[in-house]
Length: 458
Ligand code: GAP
Image 1 (cartoon, helix red, strand yellow):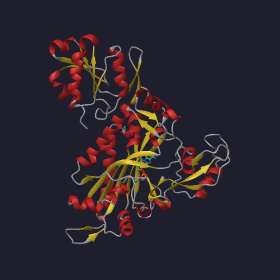
Image 2 (cartoon, protein in one colour):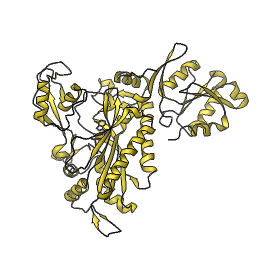
Image 3 (cartoon, protein in one colour):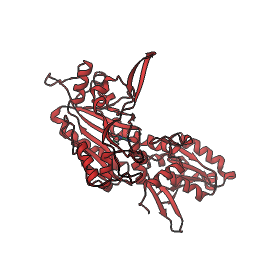
Image 4 (cartoon, helix red, strand yellow):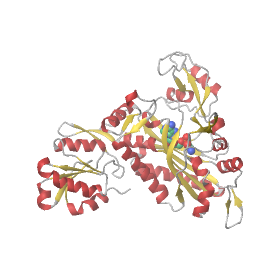
């Protein structure tokens, strides 16, 4: 098994098999945008479904929303994004490429120096003292560090010439805060309860590439738990554990996961941490768990003039709940799953096979139906396809020899291949071939749906 996989290997594998394509590729692409292809969209949807099931469906005190991407611009004043959502950027005066100063330092030091808490002056000095050169042209002629605004702006105006600036949301959680009172009223929830959302966010990131890791348009899966301040640290610890368990359960190697406490905290936060995953580019943030105090609801109450309070039924006191946030990028998690599951295996006969050993619940196709001989078995195989596709994403392939067809399914992670042959016609049984072990079972057609269902539960 070859686990020395590089990011370039994952990018070309994803492109070859239809997981992810460069965005707007026929126009030579558009930097840091990616399009999910036929199997990629299934994988990402399954990851989102697994998250929703674990954190919304299976928690009686969590409620979902799907808020608008374009929000009243006051939202972003209240949240602090209009004033301060920016990255420290530096331009290489020689090749005109733009970089994040903090990233230059962290990459140069192999992650041993964190620039999170450094001032601009400290970062500039570190870069000068260590003679950090431009990663693109190797020049050493840097501009001053300046703050680079991360929110995409657009405008809206119903009267020509009178346009208001609006923003593409840079995080989904504000849609959860502004709906706090609506959800409280309609669900009659009691503290602690959570509001969750999955949706697109947009950031004008300065990024060195790194595929899906940092893009300008991405999906977040975010959850805000509203609670009493006295319960907040226990809830924070609980979400750290739940978040870790979730990524282990979907198949990430526990040895490639670790907690990273933030060095620099927002003034309102009691604590914050990330779970990091060991990507091919090194240890990097996968998700965040943040103690946000009463900051968000207080600010929205102040800017909107609406009361965002909770009446404690026991004490009859009105309080502004404290928020614990759990936030994870769906695209970044999809990348982690791909990096973890992708293998190039040496087979006993000397061949190699590419195989995506992904948790069966996440696999793009759960099953593939393969008639052994097209002219003899395709009619029965198509019947089976119709049966199975009622229940699962099912692929059908009657081209090439059976070995090649198995390889194709291995490469996209299909856990079960079903071969339809004379036994099927005569005895109503099929051969089920398992992706990881390549072993085969004989299963009665009547039992096939239950057989597969029992093996893809998340
Ligand atoms: N509401 C809090 C928040 O947005 P964040 O740490 O900025 O916090 C949370 O983002 C998660 O969203 C990250 O841990 C990461 O998984 C994902 N994420 C953030 N920026 C991203 C980007 N540019 N591309 C892909 N994923 C991103």
